[in-house]
Image (cartoon, rainbow, N blue to C red):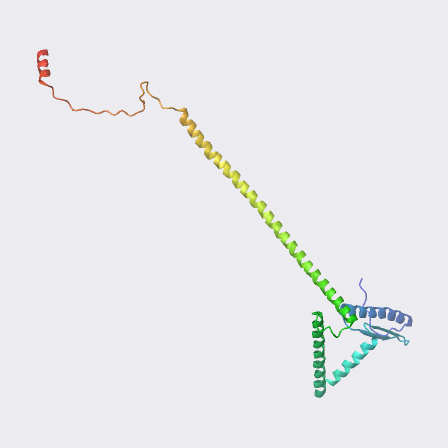
Length: 235
């Protein structure tokens, strides 16, 4: 079963009220600490119990939180006046220019320029900053190289698998080609064997019995006179 809805009103029983205060105070302090860590917020919490005891929490220091609160509260009231609003934006512009100048100076120092005004401690801090930056850059570079090598290995494995598949297909085609050649040459040998097992029949005098015989009729020649005389005598 779920918890019943608690009515938000003053607890009459002093013991229950003290127990509830202790539990919710600890929960509120825990939430304030988590909010400052997770969201990088500047948090200040002040709690006074019914007995007058003080409980507080500040992510930086309570004094800086209160000073910041008073400053922003004052600026908020000044924004209601146009002249105060102009002064406020002038101060903001001056602050931004100062921050920009500081960033540019740090950038030049990181590039090895304008180091004459730095002492040994400042130079040591600058060196440590550069070493940390270089370490981070190398780690990022190594990470990119590692990811690129993994990607190349993955592509190489894919190409290798494709090569294996193509080799299998080529082997199948080679076997099919060998089978076809075997069938073709086998049929040709059978035909040649059949031709050699039925030789042509020749006559004993060297004439082929299957050779075509060409006959030619000649014109009758007239008989001579001697032949006619012989025929008369025979008659």
